[in-house]
Image 1: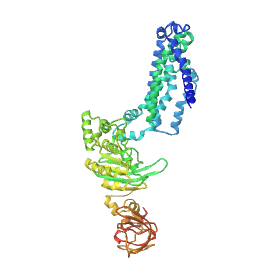
Image 2: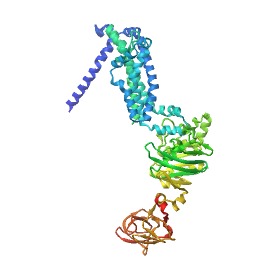
Image 3: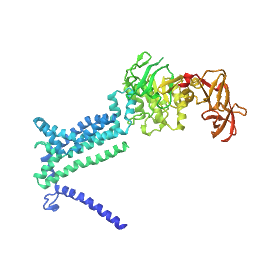
Length: 261
Length: 344
């Protein structure tokens, strides 16, 4: 029995080490003066400064696209989820599947389709809006599903009827009753959208131009063309940005799930 | 008349007729109950009055001189209490009660004053700041009533307002609701499937069956003078006697009963409390079951009529199952319906 426990612990630690060691090594490499000499060469924040100098625009571009993507998915996704929740039926199911289609298609294929369709519109092709369109297509299903599952759990129709008998027109009902009660789903969806948009690589790599590199595209670029320390420092920055988002996302999803039970 | 309903019918797309053309007039301050079993069209009628469903073409709903037939629900100024209450979980008790006033665009101070007034009227002071989820079923029911009443609707509609509560609470809240509605002095229509509820709360009861109003009248009138077999059974708890009427006699399998007068009626009914055990009664029956109910016994009898006949017997003891007893029914407690009414 004791041996079994010890074995269990060993396997767990091994698995954790398997996941954590490369991460720690990468983070350490980013703050080491010279990676080939190892940690003895001393610790420094110099590489982080270099990354900031070289790739600050990528970081801001990613944040900008993520926020814009959030706005678009909120404006399209919340009403769409509401419409789907209000009239469940075969047509709604079909629409839902259709919205979710970009999840099943590889990002590369989606990017290729966008390039074929819009590649000749130079102004659009060269603008951040082009990447934004890709991100919206990719993240929209997450917003719709998250909001929809919360809305499905409440008696939306009766709540709205209640508001209507009290004198609220359709617009007031949407903002006073639907949106506040869907909030946990909206929050969970919003965090998912931002996290996915900041981390998205596949599609973005195909859509980007040399002047428009997002955070992960810049990361690939730094791996390919910079010193290992710089690439590692970049990874560190990426972690710092994405890990809190991931944690918040998990918390919000758990909350939304509790609400819909 | 405050509320005039003419030719209100509802046919669903599949062709199901939920409500056959119905007329109804309701006076100012009157409390009317729509009573009937599930599927009789009572909730459909209520929702059409509220504006939550549209009636078939040709309907007319007037409130005094105001034709509201085609007005959307949010402009009808009707308050509604839903079966599930439909309270907004994202607002407090105060927020819920004040919502209708907010929709009227009243200034903050006026809203607060009116909310306070309604909260006091419904004795909700201890709960005013609470979240909806922190309330019991009975409290929620009162908040739903307060919310519907606060914006001074011209008509209050209640859809099975007590059915979500457990039985013990229901009786108590029924009397409370009746008292509050009188205090409000508002014209109200409420839907229920429980005849005790309808009798206790309403001035007039419209008994509905299969998409039409079978009879409308005061609780006493419905109980004492039902116009159809359905009303006799549903409201009056009357049992059909069956048998054959010949002149002033009713021939039954267990014997012959005297009627008050010669009748060409078709169907005879009697209530269980009017069936008496009598040593020399004209009917013979066999006891099949006896239930002791505290104040009385409920005795099931076979052989006297085609179906089982029940007798409510007040006494210190009751016959045992299997025994043969004799029964009497006073002529004036036998209700006779004419052929056309008996069919309805």
